[in-house]
Length: 126
Image 1: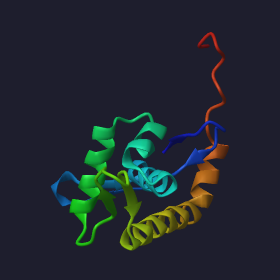
Image 2: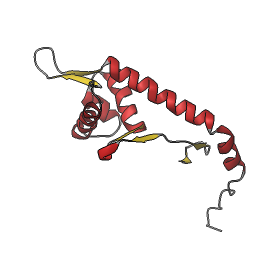
Image 3: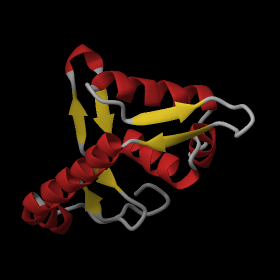
Image 4: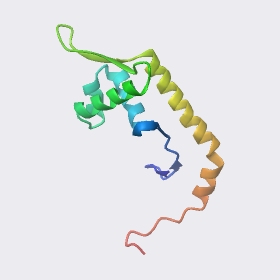
């Protein structure tokens, strides 16, 4: 757990798969951006990520599951593009649902942690 910009505590969900594969908020955000832009490169740019890095993350997600998460079309007369598959949409919805369940389940504990946090340190470090 770490602080967000508002200073509230939050839970960060990450699912670790065998062979060091991971599924977390970064990949889910990338899926959302691909859905919005219809493009792996545009989605990556919107996250200050190179096309190569975005493509590698999409490729990793596609290899993690028995169904494709994103389908891409090479450039050409109609131009390239990418789309989140129905399976990818279900994955995204389930992951976001798991985040909400974790947040709800841990709400009282997070409130307790928040109430017992040290006060902000002065700027001079004292």
